[in-house]
Amino acid sequence: MSGRVLIDVRDLWKSFGDNHVLRGISLQLVEGETLVVLGSSGCGKSVLLKHIIGLLVPDRGEVLFHGRNIFDMKAKELSKARQHFGMVFQGAALFDSMTVGENIGLPAVEHKGMRGQELETLVEEKLRLVGLEGLSRLHPSEISGGMKKRVALARAIALNPDIILYDEPTTGLDPIMAEQINELIRDTQNKLSATSIVVTHDLHSACFIGDRVALIDNGKIAFIGSTDELTETEDEAVQNFIARRGADHGSREDDEIDLY
Ligand SMILES: Nc1ncnc2c1ncn2[C@@H]1O[C@H](COP(=O)(O)OP(=O)(O)OP(=O)(O)O)[C@@H](O)[C@H]1O
Ligand SMILES: [Mg+2]
Image (cartoon, helix red, strand yellow):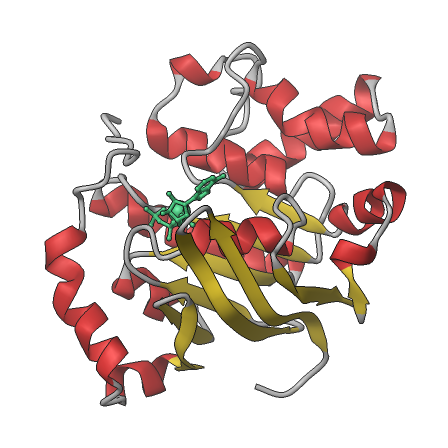
C-alpha cells in the first residue's frame, strides 16, 4: 500500500495485570484504505482500537497521528485530534436515555456547540445516509440490533471524520443484515472518502470490505497484506485462524442477537 501514512502504531505493549494482551503491535494505516483487523476472541482487537483513539494508554509504544504521538498530547490537542475520528463501538454503545437523534447529534453538540435547526438537519442527513430517515425520535430500546449498529455508524460519521474505526460492526447480526451493514460501510467509504479500520471475526466481511487485512495472534501482528495475499498465504497463524473460525464463532457472551 503506498500513500500518506495517517496512523502509525509503533511497538505497542499493554498488559492488564498478568494478562499480556498487546506484545509489540506495529502497523500503519494509509490514507484512503480500509484495513481489516482479524483475530480470535480476546486477542486484543478492541484494546488496540481503544489505544488508537487514546481511550487506553499503553505500557510502551506510540500511536502517531499526523506524526504526533497521541499519548504526548495534552487534553485539548487530543480532543481536537479525536474530532478526526469516528468510532463505531462493539455493541453500538448508544445512550439508552437519549433518542436516536440525540445520540447521533451528541458529537456535534459536544464538540461544535451545534443546536436548533442546524443540528436537526445534520441528524436527518446522517439518518438518511444509513437508511433510517424519520426515526430520530425513537429510543434505542425501540429499535433492532441492526438498526442500533446503523445509528452508531450515523453518530460516528456525524462530524465527517477522516478516519472511521468499526469494532465488529456485523457481529450478532443475521446474514442479510450483516450484508447490508457491509454494503453500508463500503458506501460510507465511498461517500466520505474516509480511511477506516474494521475489526471483525468474519473472513467474508474482511474480504468484502478490506483493502488490506491484518491478523493479531499472540499479541502481535502475525500477518498483514492484501485480501488476495490472505487467501493465498501459507502462514501458519492465518491457516490456524481460518481453521478455528467454526469453533469460536457465535459463542461470545457479548454477541447481540438481532431479532429484527
Ligand atoms: N479495561 C480492561 N481491564 C482489564 N482487562 C481488559 C480490559 N480491556 C480488555 N481487557 C482484556 O484484554 C483482552 C483483550 O480484550 P479485547 O476486548 O481487546 O478482545 P477482542 O479481541 O476485542 O475480543 P472480542 O473479539 O471478543 O471482542 C481480554 O482478555 C480482556 O479481558
Ligand atoms: Mg472486541
